[in-house]
Image 1: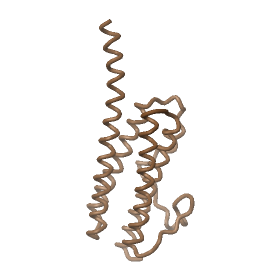
Image 2 (image 1 turned 90 degrees about the horizontal axis):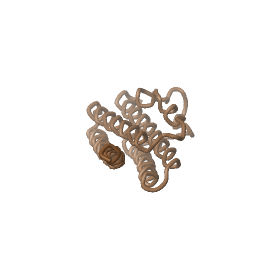
Image 3 (image 1 turned 90 degrees about the vertical axis):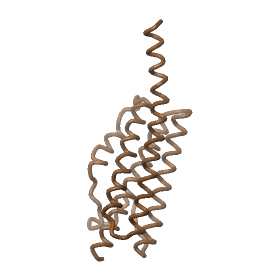
Image 4 (image 1 turned 180 degrees about the vertical axis):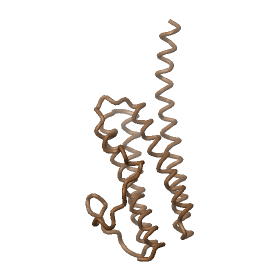
Length: 171
């Protein structure tokens, strides 16, 4: 495999790991909440799954081969993509106690989405192939939209807290 194809392959492998982690994150926390927060987190989990599937399809298009995956998305040690800061504490995040509140989860989600957008933006800058570059830019835009939506949900929840605090102060 030539150097350019190896770079594209590694970008896609890492991207797929990111999207699976996002799906796992949202799915885990969706199960801890009810109502509007549950629905939003469950929807985000489905979106991340869709990104994973799209990356898998695009990998085949760009590389001309199917990506063989096992349950950990890695075929063997030679194809493993090392985790970087985005995932440094991911397992700890999912192991947090179940008393975490929705605002905390949304703050973590915002950071995930922002990191994903940053990764895709930087990867697009480093990609040599114009189609790959454009695809990665599109993913970055999607992740930016996700980050904005997460922040909007966070502010909505936080405003209720602020209103309660203000009402207690002025009563």
